[in-house]
Image (cartoon, rainbow, N blue to C red; front, side, top):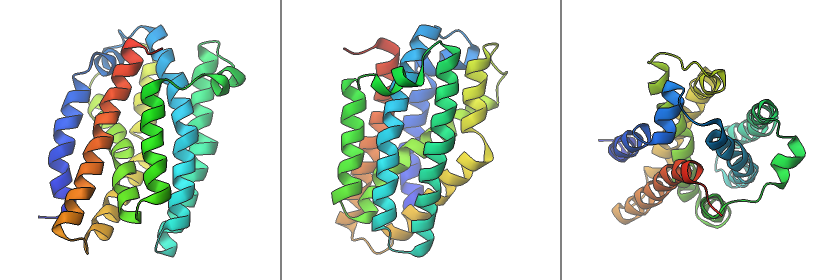
Length: 218
């Protein structure tokens, strides 16, 4: 059994929990209160700023030219494409780019991004990959599952599903899975357990992020 197969067990549990979360279910059927979705737009924008830093650290620490190139490309995708889509979302809510950038990070956003930056900057490279993988993997799996259903009437939610189930996001998740498998190959049993622990922690932060946006935080 591959290392990714081991992680898949954890992902199945976490994705099932995310799909049952009222925020995600509200996106799926179009019933989510737009004010609640605004929380996600603002907090995820702040998250992406830090996530871009994480890709920069990973590009610097990657052990192959292919990996360095991949992180550099995804860093550009995040800054130039994904964050621009967030700005477009915000505009549909009457939120300016300046307001997005000045929105305070809520505690869960801060905790999650601090965790990611810490391991991208000071953990070993395999630990960095384990920490960042759940974000990409989770969003793609959730979006692909929602895409199998009837599109929500609210176009803002339909656009979210379309964006994160798009081929470039699916390809990014698959590349990171392959990279995780590669860098975990030479790890000891204890080292692999460490990677699983980091991976699961990020999975839990993913679920906590939905909960934060659903309930709000001050």
